[in-house]
Length: 324
Image (tube, helix red, strand yellow):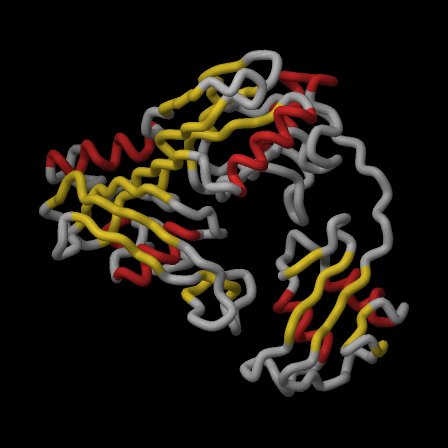
């Protein structure tokens, strides 16, 4: 999905797989739920703010291969966010940045269905006016994200200069990003690299997928640290790129999805018996240059307790109900 600099226009090419769909259905699948609701989408179509090759069309119009669909969003009213007490572990803080370990189950910033209780609300509660407006009204201070059920290391900016410089480091791939994941199965090799482009799934638009055509470059380096008799393995992963769901998509493509991942195939009865209730993926280490001083910095977030508990059970060879 492409957008204008102000994030008020979205453009989607119609692929051969999507050709023949109604315009409203095409856009309902193309637009992620956090971007726009279906009700608002219907209103935009009625108001002539959805264009097909620069021509306003009705909801029932059947899209054709090669056409370009544009959604024009009027300027939204300013949102007022109020700080809330949301738990997270602070690893480091100064006048420019906060480095933290995000708990699983916490959404990073407000979106459709998550108007309260996000990490941003917790940061506003902690930092107050120091954070307001940095990087956008709904995403103050946020320079990168973790999925709701991924735990671990994040850096947040506390002023505009820090935000600008950190975003630039992420874009230029200067950031060191190390993750740990529990994988389903045991790869035949001890280490490797997955170099496969990732894009929006052609049918299930809430998912990502390996896309040889239309995908963006994505590279994940992986190494097996530990193998378990129950048929799982602990892996360390280093990202060269930062695509949405990158590790989850790449490990599933490798045939060894992240354990507990209900979207990409890592959820199973055996995983549940180990007490796995979410994708076992943790952002362990984050390295970057301090946005003000330029000094190299690296932070480590210990594995979240639920993953530590699962690993302990695997090492003992016990499951829930076996006295674990």
